[in-house]
Length: 150
Image (cartoon, rainbow, N blue to C red; front, side, top):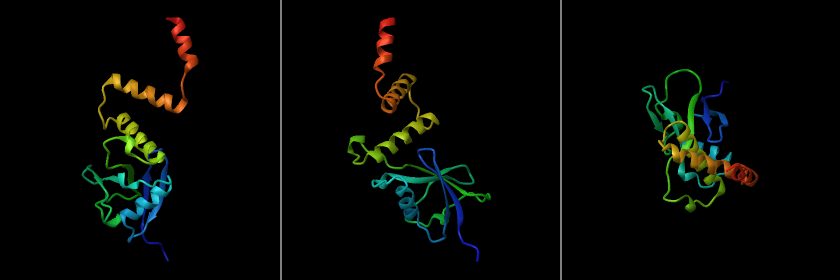
């Protein structure tokens, strides 16, 4: 007996891709639970999935509907979904979990890189510097070399 369902590829914020066979009865909320478990994400209420329909419009999966009830492209192949931040908050300090903060950061970085968010060039360099400092730590040796050259 052949398994019912449709292959789905979910692009995650950390550049990983999940391939899943989505069963006809699977709710979008259940898919969110499943994907959130890959990050051990507890604050999943801020996140959702987007897809591109046949007209090229980007749409959100409705969490109270079955995944396969959405108006996906009729093209063959897996359904392409993006796991993204759907709801933003007033301040990142209101987030409780480190994982949630990291995913918000990855979402913002991707949106700026892809041109979804326009940012002035001066601010882009400041953001890049903060990201570099966060990932690599302080460059005190580099700063000392730089200041002695001036």
